[in-house]
Length: 158
Image 1 (spheres, rainbow, N blue to C red):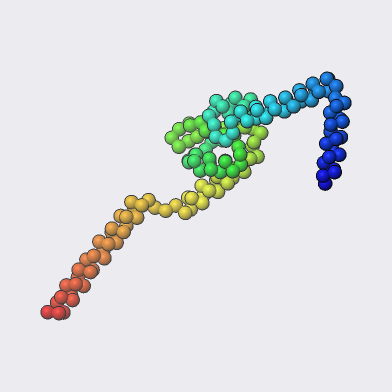
Image 2 (image 1 turned 120 degrees about the vertical axis):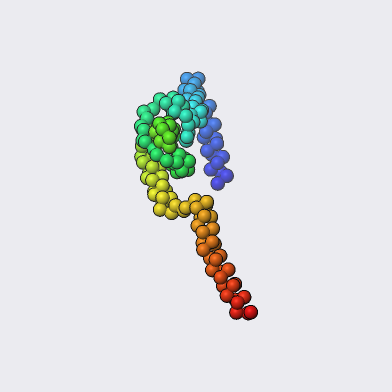
């Protein structure tokens, strides 16, 4: 294992010593281009962003109307690593803007989002205040019966 590493190191040193100035310049230019690409890639925002930033990506965008909670869609969209933005069009009405190149990922995210919305609609519990009111009504109904039973017991004892 060590001999292989040594032989490769020697081979690399021999190849590097044969480099001319033009070859070295080409290698440095290629390395610089790769570094610049990575830098630009890291500078571009990902995930949820403003409409202006999304449009600055210089890519075609598509839009889908979205009614309801945006937070739920945010959770789902993070899983699929999509770039998107919301534009409010009315109360609880939004326009979901996304890159056209990510249409398949958005479709998958939107499918999962719609399943979540449907599941929440089925499993929706009544608000806590309504539960308290029902419990209070039940307690009122039960309370007179208990008082009557107490009176009957007192009458029996006497």
